[in-house]
Amino acid sequence: VIRWVDFDSGMRRRWEYKWIKGAVAPLGQFRLPMEIAAPNKPGRYKVIYSLMRLPSKSAQISPPPFDAPQDEWPGEFAATAFAVNVN
Image 1: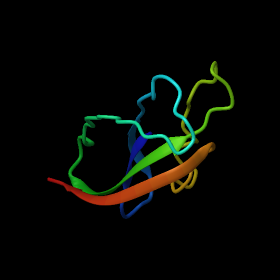
Image 2 (image 1 turned 90 degrees about the vertical axis):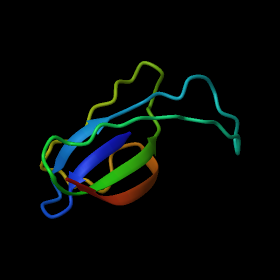
Image 3 (image 1 turned 135 degrees about the vertical axis):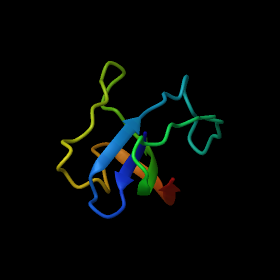
Image 4 (image 1 turned 180 degrees about the vertical axis):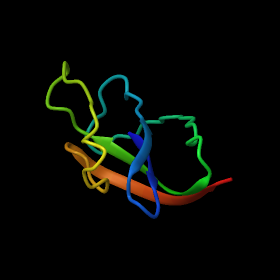
């Protein structure tokens, strides 16, 4: 999951996801190329790239409410954040 969070307010502005197709072995490696679109409003953002576990193959991903803390989502087990200026 990639999510754009307003740096000052902490509010989520955009999110998108991409599935890993197939199984990954423990300690295995995979390549996940991804292009992401910036929010339509200029400003400072925290871009958070995270890996999530879903409870089953049929589970659907849905974001927490917009007013929920954006630093962690249910099922998230790894994340990296970057500060980005959108001009």
